[in-house]
Length: 333
Image 1 (spheres, one colour):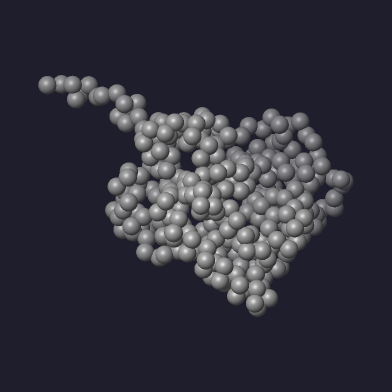
Image 2: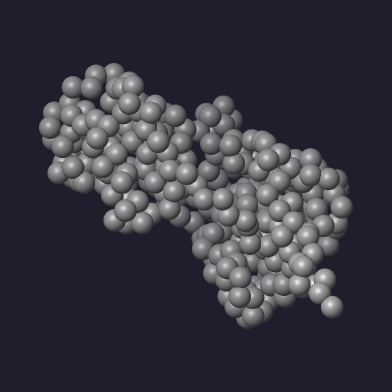
């Protein structure tokens, strides 16, 4: 790939460089979210340096940009590292420039923070505080199966096995699949949900719809699968929308913001002062299993962690009062 581009290619107002970045991201099968984020960071980097061509810049310019993010905009370590990854992609994958300084740029260190965990009483209050049936089922599934929010929303009909009370999480974080449980009390609600989903899918097919998004490789290999019931989302959107990449009209899954708003509102109504999000339910799932006596390796598998050290953070949450040590104040007469 040539790295000799005209000066206008570097301008964020010109589609040429961004089109190359976008095309390369799609060839590499990056998600739509990552595509949007990476394009945004490339534009900000070029604007920051007065629309200079990225090929004309080096380590000092990149570090100046990252320092500006940390010092002037006070972004998190995760955000700074995402910007760095986007610029790595620009240089290596789009401009085809391998520079030794890229490997030596220091990534921001994420602060070690303990996760927010709800007590059992708080969990009950939160779950009971959500009235909308569909969102209530989603939130209970997140907690009962230890799912990330998008793992729950992207759940396909074919990956729910009610007879075995288990579901398969496909392409989770890190591109891994895993199996987790379905709570007994959710079996019947899920059965009714899937039956209703079948009716909705039949109605879509009857009017020439019924298509669902599939990963690019699967869509090419199984072109008919996108209209098969098994591939449909368990929790579909109320209406159809246009795919920003292909332009196809499809029924997507429930908007994650609906779930986020419902959880925050329920937490406020329950008087929970901790910062609560849908991901808090996954943290609580793990901690409550450990409290119930399940071993760390089992919890690791259910969460889909590659390294047990990631799961070990929940053992620290269990160590109340400073690793379970009694305060000397309590020993005074």
